[in-house]
Length: 86
Image 1 (cartoon, rainbow, N blue to C red):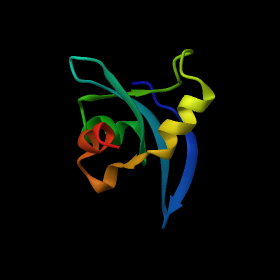
Image 2: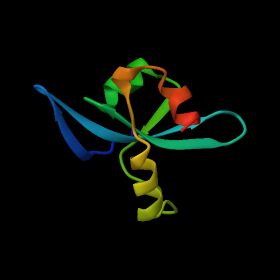
Image 3: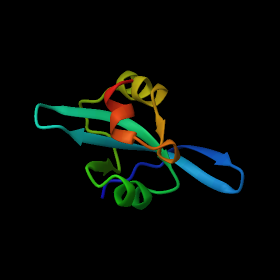
């Protein structure tokens, strides 16, 4: 598991964090951020996603900012579909 701990928000009493993820669809990879309480929570709810602890060196700060702007919340469901169609 490769968890990234960047960007924390407080939703009531629950702390949620943006986690860098990738979805491999067989024709390429879709990168994005998923907002959740932990990387384990993402892995359990959406096992087809890989959660990263740090960004690959070829993702620039601008790339990461763009991905973060399209962050999806795990609690909203349909995470893979939302990552694919943002």
